[in-house]
Length: 421
Ligand code: AMP
Image 1 (cartoon, rainbow, N blue to C red):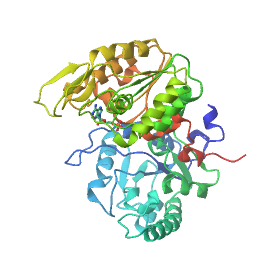
Image 2: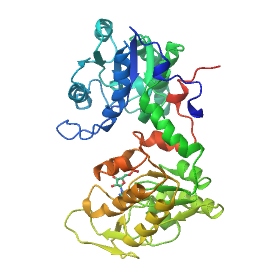
Image 3: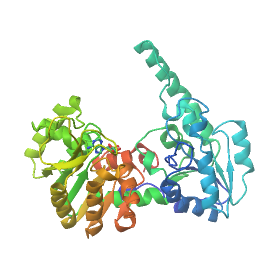
Image 4: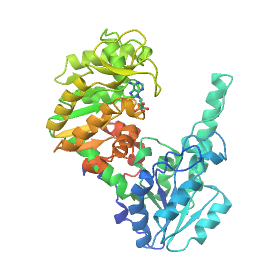
């Protein structure tokens, strides 16, 4: 596992009697009543927390949740996560701290007993976690000054977090592409007493196979809303993949860049040049780019306006899913592949009328005998929604992080764990 060379596993750390800061990614979706709608990320971090306890460690678990704009923001409290942890770990005592730094938390950390878990309140209640100033600024100078100030106070915030524990464990794969206070800035305070948890190891193992040593044919399926979010990954995949199948709204920006009339489909007009550039790179490569040849369209995105399958668009129609003639070749290349990476739905899968393209891709993945990896975000939610998640090799907990890894970028959260030789 070359990518993890120089990085300790939680199993290499001396945990006995030690307070262990465990950075997890409990950024879970909540409904309007504040109930967790998908606890996948919480369940995925449990083996590491249990290992720490079994080996005499005292876990202090920390995460962010959502994008709070103030401290506190009750709608982004980790309290529902504490309640879910109580259900998932009935044999453990979960103590919820109403803050993530300060005298009260220091006291709670000191008093922690074997078998107990201290869960800190949302790290992002502090702007120092992300190191970005909040609010509006009248001038660029004011903004630059605020940025500088928050970077300075970030060091103090990171030191306060670090003062809670003796050992640092990162199991927050979904946030590893962010150099935030709890992901990177606080980590040097632990010297060599730092390492990665089981979830991080699992993610690197499966995504690493795809990034560094993919067996061919290697097929990428990319969908979702925007081309502009995925330029880096598309460009990198053009040089590595045998085929890239595109669906979702991003297909319409690429089709528009080819001069196809896509009527009222969602097109990123300011990304048309980027899309043209991508098409030119594909033309110069050995990679084949598959774009939709038919579409499920409607004139409105609701449950009553009629929808139909078309091969060319009429005025007012928008493409909301890939059509059956597109699904077939996509499924065929997926089934024959030895490595598959999938990120992004093929249509507005949240509405069952536009979910068939995404279902077809998910099913094809389950029929592929190669290494099939689903890269987080909406595609991970979709494959779980269809009940097919246990029939693929790996479903990542990280959308942005898995894209950056597949793109070949270094992830700051992982680099912070590396011990210099
Ligand atoms: P992303 O976060 O980029 O993976 O985008 C996921 C979102 O893209 C989902 O909420 C989908 O509903 C949306 N989406 C997928 N296909 C389309 C489409 N053809 N038109 C509009 N939105 C779409």
